[in-house]
Image 1 (cartoon, one colour):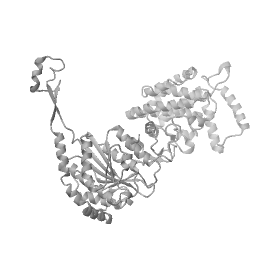
Image 2 (cartoon, rainbow, N blue to C red):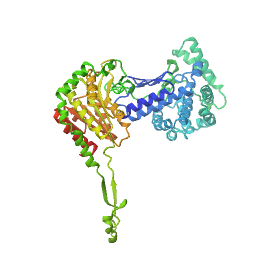
Image 3 (tube, helix red, strand yellow):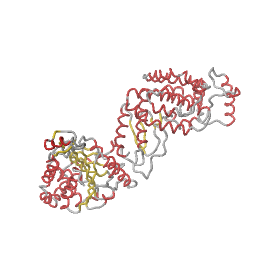
Image 4 (cartoon, helix red, strand yellow):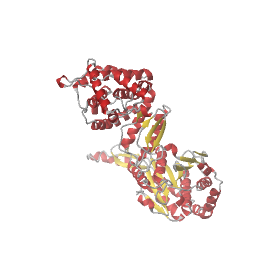
Amino acid sequence: MLTRSLEVMRYIKASAGRSNLRVVFENKNEPRHDGKTIFLPKITAKMTVDELEEIMSSTDHEVAHDEYSDFAILKEKKINPSTSTLGLLWNIIEDSRVNALEAESYSGFRELWDKTTPRLLEKVLKNNTDDTPLSVAILALIRWDCEVSGPLFPSCALVGETYPRNKKFEKILEVFTPRLIACQEESRKIEGTKLSYELARDIFRALGGDPDKEEREKLLEEESGTEEKKGKGEEEDKSKKSKETDKKAKEGTLKKEEDEEWCIKKVEIKDLASKLVTTHDLDHGHMSKVGLEHDVIFDSGSWEITPVDDFVVVDYYNHSSTHLIQSAQLDTDSTAAVFYCNAFETRIKNEVSVSENFAQQVKRLIQIRARVKYEYGVKKGKLDQARLSRIVLKTPGFSERVFKNKINSTVLNAAVTVLIDMSGSMAGDKVLYAGQAAVLLNNVFQVLQVPLEILGFTDAYTGTCPPVMYVYKPFTQPKLSEEELVKNIGASSASMLGNPDGECILWAYDRLLKRREKKRLLIVMSDGQPAASRGVSGLAELTLKVIEEIEQQKKVEIYGLGLCSNAVTDFYKDNSVVSTATDIPQKLLELIERKLFNEH
């Protein structure tokens, strides 16, 4: 869900920060972790809630690996889970270990993993349709792990029960249950990894494999540099030798019907590994993939959500900027600021003066709505003496309605964000009208003591053209003079470029959502279609989807105020359009009445 995208990005970075891991969002769907950085696909308008949650839980999983797993053992033995049967078995057992440890430490991870992994387990089962011994063994191993970890992940256990049963495998794996539990309880990095590695070796041996032989082969391959596939003749040779080795397997080796040797044979490990929830590819420097391979999420036609830390923020209250180039907009005495202030003084100031009683009009309106009201003729509450005579009538449903209840007004329990489009097309009268509306709203909510934040947005024509957010007045600044507000807007007018509406609405919404007031109102002032400096493909669709989600969730009221343009009618269910400065006070009054009083 798009309204959660910034929250998800923060969650991912906070989780990775526990192990000092960086997070990079990129334009491809190859989630991975190289020990220092977690690489994830950029979040786009097409990403579903399920996919967002899977990325969150699997990021926690990778952080757990960083906390509890020591990959030195596998590197020393040259055992790679993406190309080795032994490594593949170890991967599943080590995943089980770190998940259990993480779940014991963080209840949030336990709930999130148990919510998302069942979907992944279903995909694993669907993808593993062949009946090769290794595939059957892997499914049996997952079923066994789900059962052992059931107390921590009950939903996963339920899906695990749908995996095909294999009594021979189950009988062998049952013997190792106490050892898997011991692994899940060992939080020390080196000791725990050794336990899971030794357990994987013993399970591999019990299933008919030869862990010593596989380790030797990998070491020889590494030394000789012959990682490429061998010729058919060599493969036949190796197959014969493998059969001879299999006959020497220890007790517990599984047998096919008619006493044929039945053991795990080397198949396309990489193909099977790609079907699992996570696999570690040490040959290519990837400690792990993150999550199951999804269908391609990144799509050039879908707008990419900018990571929250990449937004450029110019804060006039704290006189700070997160981007060097945009820091020039902090100068409220710049040529652009002076020009804007002069234009505002000569062309708009009179209109604001005429509307000096605007705040008083709204205040009177609120006072009328906020007067104490009572609900009469109810069955519970304070006794209403004027209705005591009903008692003697003894009429069911009527005689007991002799109470009244006081209705407390919550009209002032509100927080408001004003978001102004500061793109190039807003230059001229439109940006002056936006300033007028901002001044009026600042005055009225200051009088009413309603928390107000006034923001502006555009983008930067540099690098990836990130969104730029101007903080003219934050919630934390109760009072801001008209002069200061006009100067701040004027200073930002020096750089009016694109307008990536969808992303900037998300940013403002995310801040407003943190407010505890009962009513939250987001007023977006814009003059047209979204058009960012890095392109427009998918941007209008993103903007529409963001607004629709906000409207459907009803956590924040959103309103589009069109400035000399009807474009807002295409995006916002609740909207109005102003064409002249004289229209603004009345439109704002109607807006406040409709949204803060729920008058329609």
